[in-house]
Amino acid sequence: MSRIVVMGSGETAPTMVKTHRSVLADTFPDGGPSGTALALDTTFGFQDNADELVERTLQYFEQSVGRRVGVARWRRADAPSGEAERTLADLEQARWLFAGPGSPTYALRQWRGTGVAAAMTDVVRRGGTLVVGSAAACTVGSHAVPVYEIYKAGEDLHWAEGLDVLGALAGVPAALVPHFDNAEGGTYDTRYCYLGAARLRAMEALLPDGVGVVGVDEHTALLLDLAAGTATVRGSGVVTLRYRDHEVALADGRTVETGWVGDVVAGRGPAEPGAAPPASTTSASASAPPTTSASTDTAGRPDDAAAPGSATSLRAAVDAERERFDAAMAASDVDAAVAAVHAVEQSMQDWLSDTLQSDDRDHARRVLRAMVVRLGELARTGARDPRDVVGGYVELLLSLRARARADKDFATSDHVRDGLADLGVEVRDTPDGAEWLLPASA
View 1: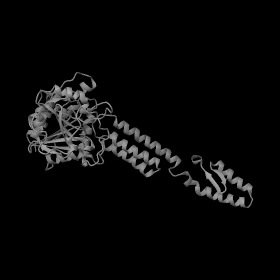
View 2: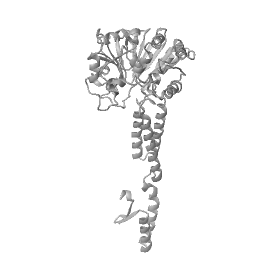
View 3: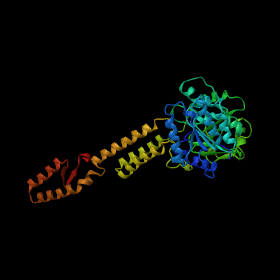
View 4: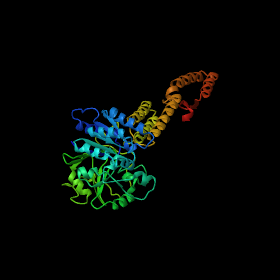
């Protein structure tokens, strides 16, 4: 098989479940022996919650993807020699190796000068599959974006030396940039792995001649089949091939020759392999202002982007259900409101194993609690129109009052009217008969 799978983000999210299943099925057509599918924990090894992230990763693959995977532990390059040798021995047996979110520069420091980098490429060389997402995706290019150093710490623009897996194995001389369509910044440009357009152009100028950029959108995968010599896009976004200001975007389902991809990012060869692509496959240039939103419209997308993973973040999924809940409450549709509450809880469960570090879970809990409070208030007041609830009783009393008035029994008539007033029902006598109003409708 010999495949490299690069995910722009969402590598442990519901959006990429179908892609993972397909890749694993291709890698293990016979089911495969246990211990040959491994998740490497280096990228987030510096975090205090690294153990939790490992468990969530394993849970995601077992419960969501349907494949039990093991752990290749390599959090630091200076681990005890016995532990390091055991991990390297495990990697030598791997047919499928996964690495995901965290810090690309931390991972590179722990891998460089050790046997891990060679073991990663050897998985592919012997016919296996290397799957990298987010931070790990940054490392497989010739150059890596120092995300934390530039975006968080404000260091001068620079590239870190990458593993160059793409160049060595696929002939694609490029820096790999995940989160290419990121929109977390709102009006602040956080595309291109939080660099923004101006910094991306400045960073590209620092690349050697003949080295470009492969940008992978969030919740999108680039599948490089080295045996077939093809590159295929899967997911809700696009893969962008750039050489300085020239770029070509490949949409979901597009398959091209890997050699052509290498030519484009090296600044040589035709702009398109054969006929020009549909207009929808051409992305905006890096100088254009960000136009994507945190909630991506996935209409017409493949199953990877369909329910339950139609939203590309837990926040987007929850916010969509909150809108449905608000509409249901306004329409006094209790069943729809309860369904929205259930959907929020299910979304929280669907995204439970996602290792992306954000406040989405806190946001989801706040929304869910607010929904429950509003349903509790509705339980006190009732969802039905109060006129529908008390109307029959009021009409019966008014008919008795009308009979008393006809009999000139004004004492009884006034007693009924005053009694209804004490209960909050205003009675108005008109030429056409008595009318009644509740405070809310008065």
